[in-house]
Amino acid sequence: MEEKGYLKDLVSDISKEIEELNKLSFEALNKALEINPGDVLAYFMRACTYALIENKELALKDLAKAIELDGKFKKEAREDEDFKSLWDDPDFISLTQ
Image 1: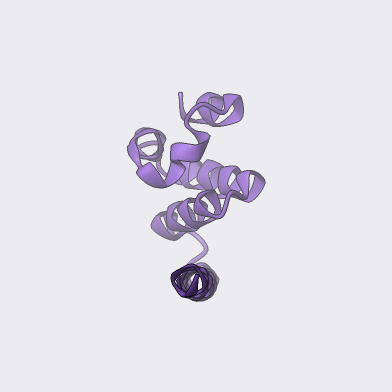
Image 2: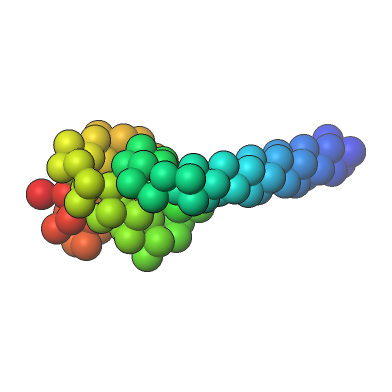
């Protein structure tokens, strides 16, 4: 029984760490976009982060901006594992064709 409690605590700690890393990621990417609103890689990376936390709407919004700035990100998104949860989504497919 103690092992289950330990594992539950470990999973909780890891979840908190992931949330903190995502927060730091968003802060850094938002700052990059504040400094350079045309930073295509920052838009793409923020889209990846949104996709990882399953925020489809914001992931697609930032991905659309990255694609607008550089069309190569259509292919990048279709191959990037961060977008795996969206690969079968009709909106994602339409955006990346």
